[in-house]
Length: 73
Image (tube, rainbow, N blue to C red; front, top):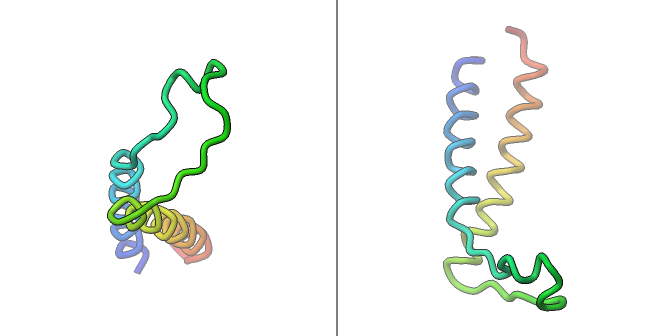
């Protein structure tokens, strides 16, 4: 049983990494050093789907990690 959850955890981790890397960054290096002020970004289309998928995968990753902690070895 633990083995299955470990494989699922690994798959979720890979998908989570891919979703984080795919996301588009609006603020560049100029805003780090005092460039633009507060900018509201509205996500649409595929960007919104990737954003929500990232949140869902991160919750799943945390949940499976906690579940593995409580499962007997």
